[in-house]
Length: 303
Image (cartoon, rainbow, N blue to C red; front, side, top):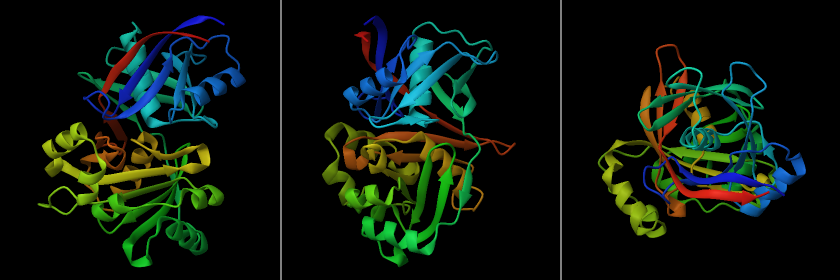
């Protein structure tokens, strides 16, 4: 075993313990797949990352991303959190204000806007789900057909079964059957657009902690999309805040006219979190997914 620099970072929040935690091993050299997977299982966080020297000449660093059950080719909150940790540990990008991360899906540009980072969403493929699978997923979520506005299978590395529901309150009230979702092998992302001038929903108030409630109230009028992510097939019943899903949702819902080119998404309320995802589709059609990060643990790990 070797002593390695380590950070635990809270992502998609400027307020510690209100976002999605990420474990970052800043020196993953010499670790094999089994050791990485075992450590990710032990941390029991939705994702754990390991930073390595890049093998692509234009990349600043390379990252491998593990859930408790498997490795991911790409994920959003590990991208922002790993970059935050790398910069804080003294990493210097080849180009000022622009970092290039290498991961299994390829090279991911990341840009800095003050303390906030944003990644360029990888290309996303989408397709219509079969009616039979849609019916099974809806049943596992306890949804009726009239509550679903649209459905797409979204793939930008991770594959999400995406659902746009009739409203945000329906999203917050969901009580999925995670066993059925695991049997179906589907990671499901659900989203709903809040009605303007509404008060925070009863589901949000009853399920979130005091700090998250205070944070949520402060920007409730700015939230354009409420999101939840259910990932039982990879060992995570509900992910607090999910960058890859929010990226795919933006690449789907903005062109379809459901959302503006620049908006704020909320995720994590039903877990007592107050994740905030800043989405921008630029003039070239590139979607950028941004958020704040806070380091909560800074030390070393024997691994």
